[in-house]
Image (cartoon, rainbow, N blue to C red; front, side, top):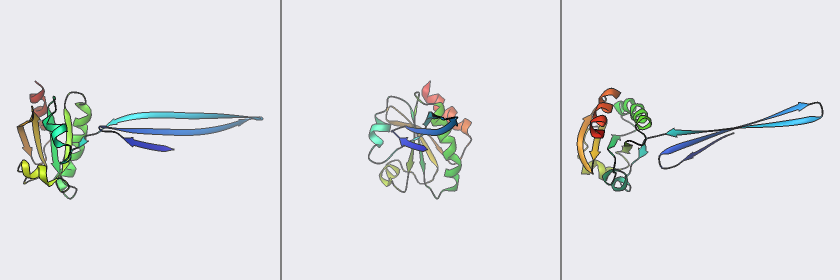
Length: 145
């Protein structure tokens, strides 16, 4: 049995397995329960942008992307890795530009993937295009210093 639940930032995966053993006339039931916490980048929308990004007391990395964008698909897994590594130190989120045009227009996003770094509610750095993880992490580390 596999159950999944997504909270604001975490994806909880519950795996349950039942085994029944019959020894002689006795049935032994064994239940295995394993819960894993999987950290994911936040889904940022027009509705929650101010709360999650502008009012954050931590540095924020926002990935502006779209499903049809090839380079975005290359950067996406890297952003997810950064979300895991910087959990608790920085906020990492993703904005789908097709579903959230207001934020995209507000920050003049014309090319994607575009990654904006925020600190204190202001854009402090920017990266456009697919780049290695080390480049994105270095820019985020500068905001943490």
